[in-house]
Image 1 (cartoon, helix red, strand yellow):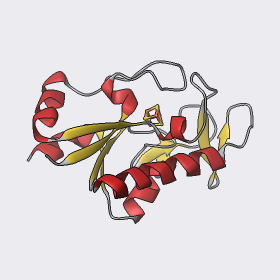
Image 2 (cartoon, rainbow, N blue to C red):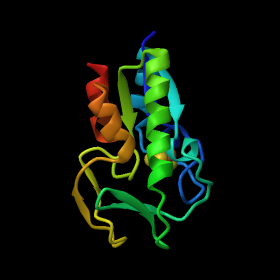
Image 3 (cartoon, rainbow, N blue to C red):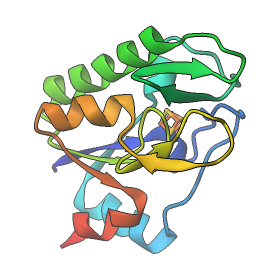
Image 4 (cartoon, rainbow, N blue to C red):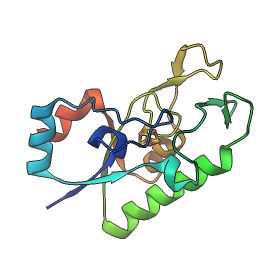
Length: 147
Ligand code: SF4
């Protein structure tokens, strides 16, 4: 069965910055995805060495900073590299990632002001996976993985 990398928080794993999960996938869609793919949960921020819960971060000028100003760019890069290593190791060609995250976001991310403003862009992991030819889908595009 084809493997699909999935943001772990969307599969009910409590790995978000606030210590919670984010079950945004429709149950029916999730069931159909499970029939078609072997779902591989992954959280790049955890693999980048960050604790849970943690202070939220946003991308500012190609760096990632926590709200308190701590520069966590290297943690985000490490997590992205681990995601790509996992894909390479298991031949994973597609990923379903959580939108708007500074790691997993695709198409839109927060602007770095921590005021809830969105701008165009990708999270650090998404950017690396895309550059390696992995097809990345956000949760609003999950149905595209089922056609
Ligand atoms: S880094 Fe990705 S998988 Fe981890 S909590 Fe954030 S959105 Fe979810």
